[in-house]
Amino acid sequence: MRLIQSQDQGSPVYQVALAGRGPFALSSSAATGDVFAWERDAPGRLAPLGRFGWDGERLRNRRPPDPADLYETRGDRLVHRVVHFVFHPDGQHVAVVGPDRPVALRSLPAASVLRSFGDAGQFNSVCFTESGKHLAAAGWITLQRGRDSVGRLSVFDTDSGNWLGSAVGPGSAVTAHPEGTLLAAVSNGQGMARIQIFGAGPAGVVRYDRGAELYTELDGLSFSPDGSALAAVGDEDYFTIHVLDFPSCRVRFRKFLDYPPGYVRRFRLPKRCAFTADGGRLLCPYPTGDVAELDARSGRELRRWPAHDGPVHSLDVRHDESLLLTGGLDGHVKLWQLDDAPRQGPDVSAAPVTRQFLTEASVLPDDGTVRYVVDDYEGEDAVQTE
Image (tube, rainbow, N blue to C red; front, side):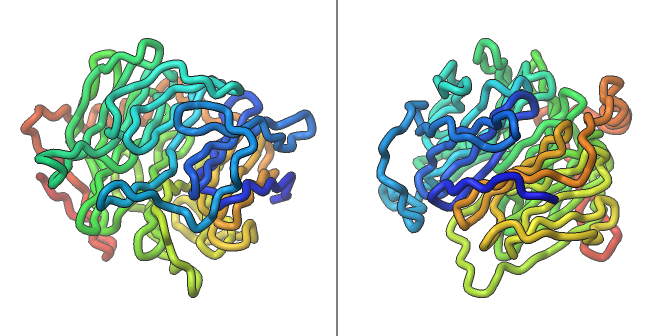
């Protein structure tokens, strides 16, 4: 892995993303929630395009953020002033989620807001389906005067912004299967995570009777390029990585990593791991400041590289150019050239994993029962219905 360029963002990096097409990249600040837009020039280096805030305005001559200013207080609640964002498959648009705001679809490089999805305060994770025609967002709905909350997954038509349907359950994170219409979403609670599988389309949201239950809370999900594996990352008392077979939802392996001595985790991160183009290896952001490459079948560590001074908070890959983007607590955004030869992802047009899933899974009615594969940490997964 070779470093192409390092840019100092000026505050701890919360999330990074590389567009699957085109020259754009994004990073965000854990201190202010501002988003930094970057463009790769002819040599492949990152050039700053600008910086925009919650409502999409371009920010100029703004006071440098205080890295210690990680939260703002509203009443008796601490609110993360950060965002979750994801590129549209066209590489020219990005969906952004913020606290107490609807999902906003913005165009680059101007960062102008094209339309909004949902009501304010609902969502904290967002993704597009493979075609880009539908947008899915997960979040928590507060009930009974703020004392209770329930997770909800909502699907919208990207072009019109119309709401197509919702399902109760997952509120923490959502990701789209590369073959088209399936979604994996997770809900956290009481030190556990439940992953559920849904379908998204013009008719709205379909919930299936398949899922997994893990004894850790999760912050990010990502499918392998061929859709046959799902990586789930947690950032609770320690950094956790689980890789599940799909569509069986059975755990292939798990890893638990301690944070460095003296490190204080001040905010949850939308962490995710990234598979290589062939799905055989997994790139992981380590709390040691390294990027590690794991065997995606066994979890065996193949190699690691020092990447940042302090924990790596986020990473993203682009397979057709063999690029890796990382961001860390040290405030740097770094672009790397991977050793792999650039290649396109596998051809998933025939949707073999989805077809297998649909032969094994059933659509659930509203009062239906989910069959969770429960990881018992002893190599024998139990199946629990609820």
